[in-house]
Image (cartoon, rainbow, N blue to C red):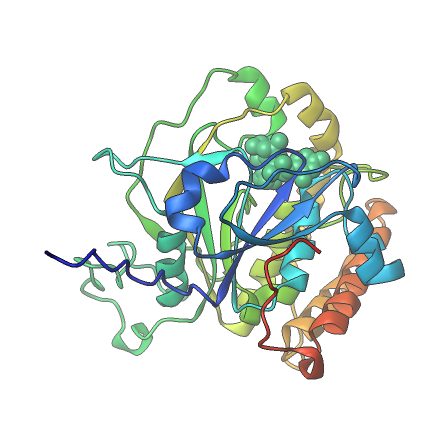
Length: 361
Ligand SMILES: O=c1ccn([C@@H]2O[C@H](COP(=O)(O)OP(=O)(O)O[C@H]3O[C@@H](CO)[C@H](O)[C@H]3O)[C@@H](O)[C@H]2O)c(=O)[nH]1
Ligand SMILES: [Mn+2]
């Protein structure tokens, strides 16, 4: 009798953590079970810490609520947002793995045009493990993909590519629109599946969405601070945008690549556009000053680590954006606190190969 088929070990099984910010039970994991069950989860429970979050059986996880964050970081916990999905960055900080995948709990497995279920995590891993092409655009998209290559005229000196720091996935069904767009197009659904992965060119910023995102934590982890949002803050739903702008300036400086495109997830829940408008509206006009700031940001060559780049960026934020609004002075200070907290938990002598035992903390 044929032996039972041996399941292949999932890619990066012991080198990747899945970080989920949540205020709800995690039933959505049932749909992801075939793709996620072999990976370790880091659940960041936002909101009321006395609430119990139900995690389906069979998953290996550690769960942190606000009491845990305060206990672990002490006063430095002030840099971790409360009552906003930005809290997820705490999961990046406590992880000990080389890679991170973060996903929202209203994101489900999507199907490709052939009707096959998409293993979004596997595609992100492929994106992260293959080089990027930030210096010269390949018109046949990802040249490292099966069945594609560099096109004629692509310099051979650039074909080795750059290390990939971030893989930014997309969404079918509810697209990540801002509130004004949601308000004018309440019924719009994204039905377009584009079978492509692109490198965001060097010197180009983009709006990074946090709901289906993977990154090389060892490369760019310290820059993936999801900015101060939610409770007590004048702005919301710009946490991932802030991280994306800081991250891209640093990746450009360090010579790393950022990809966007596949994989798709199925985003099921449209959050309330009126609530979103209240959270976003300051960001909608502030960003007209923020984008030129990041586009013009220059990091000195003496900045050779991500931490040094990030501290330098925080200094420039304080100097140049503090005049836009005092919030950016607070945010710049929080950026420094984030690095201090990150280094406190991840300094080399503390780095251990021991993995969490999967029980809730
Ligand atoms: O106070 C909160 C609210 C939510 N969460 C968790 O964060 C994610 C996203 O929440 P939700 O899906 O309700 O929000 P959206 O408006 O659809 O997504 C926006 O949030 C950005 C971050 O993902 C995304 O880029 C935007 O489109 C869920 O897991 C909630 O459980 C929270 O932790 N705290
Ligand atoms: Mn959502």
